[in-house]
Length: 491
Figure 1: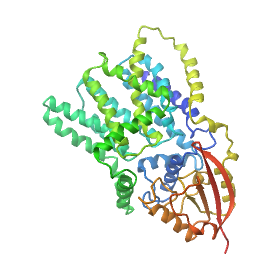
Figure 2: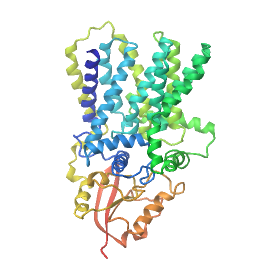
Figure 3: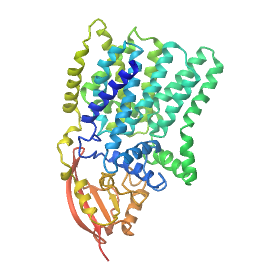
């Protein structure tokens, strides 16, 4: 009964805060984030016979596309299904957060910490629109962190738990492998601890159990790619192109390490001043006598490994810091622990939640979009023009996926369906193929999205074999974009 009660509470907190904070919420006209739309397009393709990485090119992991594909099955042309899964993911994440809180405090303090913790995470600048792959990794990360801290407290862990943490690592690997910092820290801390205890047998068996757990979720995907002749595409796109075409490669290791903490600092500062302050307060639990030395070591190791894994590539975006922000939990636990002598009135829960929701509305960087009507968004204006043609094909050109495949419900008929964040010199194939589609008249409509400055060659056929039928301007992430809709001229 206690579990059901706290799970219900986690669900309510998740539902109410994400309704306000996430652009995937039905309170928003559309999640206009290019990444979320690209994931939705890949998920849609997955359930419409396209082989991910082979027939459709995008950079994240196949498990993320499965999540979005299930969301697509729930709602074909909106993010309602993705929102449902986002709330489920958040509920599991907050429940596991509660399990960590319970290692230090009585259950009643979870009712204070969980809404505040969720508010801080989901209103951070790094939350960035909602439904990110980092967000869907939260449950796996938090479970791994929970088992690591629990081991540090009781100095005991079963092979079953090691396998499960490995399994979580496998799911994270299949989503976004740069978020594996906590899982890497888990195995390092466990191995060193077992060696110190002279438990050599378990020290050397545990990594194999962990790796077996990690490999387990890969098996169905390897079968999927194998049957479809796409194993090479999987490794080439998801591993090699990401490692060598997307990140800095001509920088020595010392510069890489410096950049990790430099970019982390910049990212943290950009995620609101209160986040910087709360993160800084982590110093208190790290020096507190209430927390044993082993716990401090595993938390600090997990934090450092997370920073290294995320920023070692030498690039960063505002949302990169999102997985690291979960460590503010320990600062919250430490300070709430001083309320032990304060009597808590359960009737204050309702006004407390109302306050959190109101603050979410005013603090979230996303709520401005609630005021925009569907009919005023370029994604719906162009949809109405495009869908007048029977069975149209479209190409999102010049920028990342801006939601036209989502609003029209169209599955791309080309491998490259957007311009990715590659520099042209590093990976020219992306733009060269997009230009080839236009030159060969492979699509009925081209949506050309531009900020006015191009660092890639634009097809000369765009204004020749295709005619301009509409032009709109719309802001995205504070910048004004031009959207040009071109239609193939009739022969």
